[in-house]
Image (cartoon, rainbow, N blue to C red; front, side, top):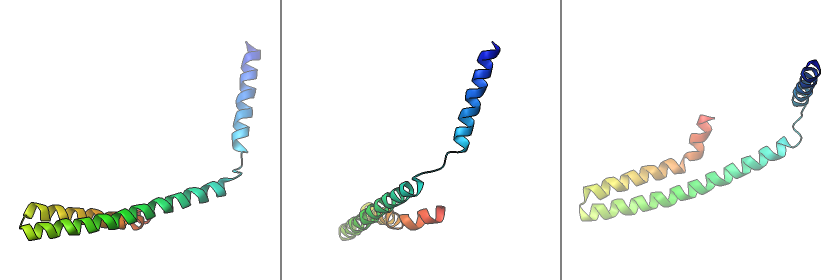
Length: 96
């Protein structure tokens, strides 16, 4: 019984020491790749935001010509959503 307990303690000590002395080998390369992917996705969201804003302006204009207040309201909501998408990178940098 004592031999199993000593072996278990030795394995636990080895695993703790291994975790303590592990150095990040390629952490910088991985971080730069993740950062570039994040920047790319933010650019896609910003481009989609511009498209959504243009669609919202079109929707608001169509509602204005038809004197339809619900379509005008929907157009304003879409424009605000597009502005949020356009400013997503600035909002995320404020949260960091």
